Image 1 (cartoon, rainbow, N blue to C red):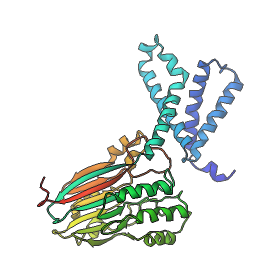
Image 2 (cartoon, rainbow, N blue to C red; image 1 turned 30 degrees about the horizontal axis):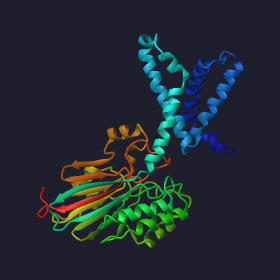
Image 3 (cartoon, one colour; image 1 turned 180 degrees about the horizontal axis):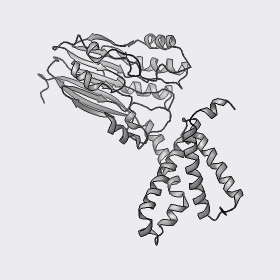
Image 4 (cartoon, rainbow, N blue to C red; image 1 turned 30 degrees about the vertical axis):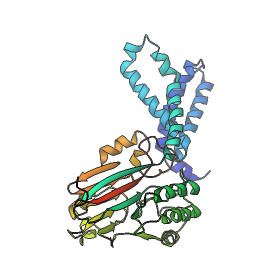
Length: 360
């Protein structure tokens, strides 16, 4: 066993193991096990440590099962701490001690999350602008993390479905692949997405995961993207019809400040910014962007992370920042786990309408 196994994530491993020791000891006592005997306690300790060791590798559905049992167990512990006196003459004590409720909730939640991840929906937003003389339909796809919960056949089916929206412009918001994606999967993902027919083509910005994989090099990634007919935008802009499309480097790397990237923004042209992470949104709004499209957050993906993400900033949906509209997609898939217990998997269609022809 490699030394690295013992060097990563020891604190989460220990915390999970300690919680499960008390959780399993309480449940074992309820079900009649002689927990006062040392061999039983040693066995419970070994099982708890093995459960804790799943934290050494954060990927995998069993990790989520362990964490959700712990989360709901802690919630029940909190309720018991607050209400154990008024409830002590009821069946509540048995419900708390038996340990089944957190296990049952997790056992129901994870299959739901598995199905929910694969239930990809179309989300449509409409934006009216006086800078436009003609309508534009934009297809926005982000956070595929190809290989996590979607194979090539399913992706192609969704690409066919997205093509039926007849987009004028296809925008890929980053994290199409990640560190777990193999080279063949990476090539298949961009081939499918690059094959979506549109009026003005397909454009891509890097996310924080696209260039982290060991399965392919940076050169192989760029070759697959451009070879699929997709244009990479990295701190550059391009004119498309009445639009000026700006593509920002990911916030995890050194990139141009908002004012410098949008320094050529013209008052008479619609400025559309594509940036993987919805960070620096206020700076982009102040620099003259009319619409900013981002992903990255996954809408939380795993309950209750979505609630926490919403407290920290834009998480999922539509936001108005001065004169700029910010749209954050929860992504067409998710990272790490083939499970989504919060928000939805989606691709986004934005209808840009000229104010003169389509008054609100």
